[in-house]
Figure 1 (cartoon, rainbow, N blue to C red):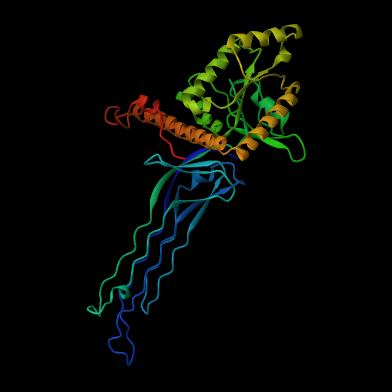
Figure 2 (cartoon, helix red, strand yellow):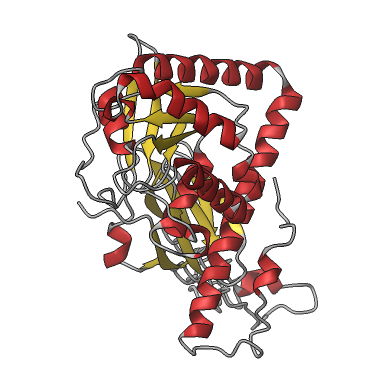
Length: 398
């Protein structure tokens, strides 16, 4: 199945039915008066979270979704039938954005979560509503209103507790294969991983967490280089980042420069994302002579002036991976307990998530605006486009 994590669709709610102009006409009932019924309300469009879906591929083939119109009213005070609502299933982890206003309408983060995205039109009133003592035979009705029509951008972000990031060929896919049942492609060339992969790391009967393997990042990822801009947003759903670095890169590049470059890309893409807890995971130590391993690690840490947690592993052999996942599980458990017990802490977490979402949307929109200017679809001066506009503080709502 093809992995599709963003697409655009158009949704249109149903039109409300018109009110009826009618008068009672029965034998022995002269001048029976108005009896025109109301129209039916138009159907609305809803999105529903569904955990069984893991891609937006279906929306690539069907782009337009319309709810049913309400039926018009009839005589004898009969109201028209309301239009049926349309329920569209989307993967859990989908962000819904109004393409015209760039408003984040909702984050679908739970199974069965229902989000109204297009309100149905209101019904029209029949002439029975307009009778009075001075107007016994009203010929006035109202028409049903049009249903709401919106163009939406759907962005799916993988739902994971722990996210792996690093340069291509750092060993992220090997690590997730080692600690979970996920089987992403592994090969000895860069950019082997082209789509995010999820793996469930089990530590006991009822103890587990979800790990996401995001495609490798390169310098300039936050500006659209490589696959970075498309997949950096997936990290905004995670709680903890494991920064995997190759201790013995085959191209003899500097591991410290790699770590620094990725950190700068995180900061550029979303300052809030760069504030997430990030642990350093030094991988492929088995490729170094045993006597040189610790010296290489100490050199990397000293030049980075690293203050956070550090883990030494050889993912392909599973060395050190057990200690890493145990520590990650303990940390996640403590975080969830804090959120449950400390409302102030939970509020700070929600604010940070809102900041990351707003900054992610702004960065993607900035990149798309640059592409439109580059393709000549709009002139930079006519579009009032300024790349610096996306580097200032982003407004968001909780």
